[in-house]
Amino acid sequence: MDNLSHEYIISIELPKIIQAIDTFWEPKQRGFKLFDVGTSYRNCVTVLYQSSQCKIRLWFMRDRPWDNMEIHVSYGRLHAPVERDFMNWNGEPHSCWHKPIIHPIFSFLDGLSPKESLARGVSDTIRHFLKMKEGKNWPLPEAFSREQKYIWDNYGQRLFALFDLSNTKLWDKYVDFLKEYYPIRDNQFSGIRITRSIPAHMVC
View 1 (spheres, helix red, strand yellow):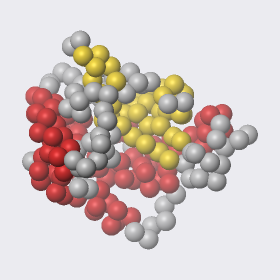
View 2 (tube, helix red, strand yellow):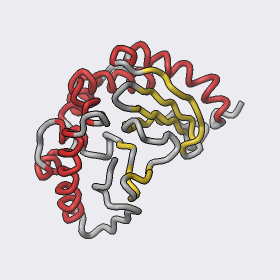
View 3 (tube, rainbow, N blue to C red):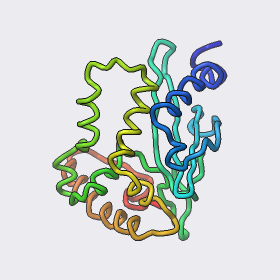
View 4 (tube, rainbow, N blue to C red):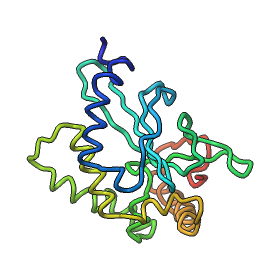
């Protein structure tokens, strides 16, 4: 089998990844269940975990046979469709999946202002993990899983509460944070043309 094929990833690589997730990330301990495995998102193999508060979507890709596997993670509220990044919410299109590597989720949870968030860049949690990881030579699935566990241990219930549809107080504050964050960021990169299909603060 071609190691770029969905069949290879699902039958050969995915069991090892899920085993590492179960061992080093332990999503079950936080109430998450393996909900779905599919190929509908960006023609990538995807794995969906879900709890009573939110969803986690993992997707896996490799551009060339000799490349290492890439593992990406994003969080969604319970209404988020697995196969799309956008959905209509209150009659308007919104982004419904949120990637901590791109979006300022951790800065918000750390209590930083939008300006402080942009000045800091990478969150202290990620910096600390990368420092701890030096010299470990963990296989990719283990390193990925340990990083996610480290993030969960640091932010705890606050991370899941952010996406909870049953209590939107924290989410509403996050949306207000984004309304201030993105104009400041766009101004800092005023020489770079940023094209968006919808305003960046339109999230659901």
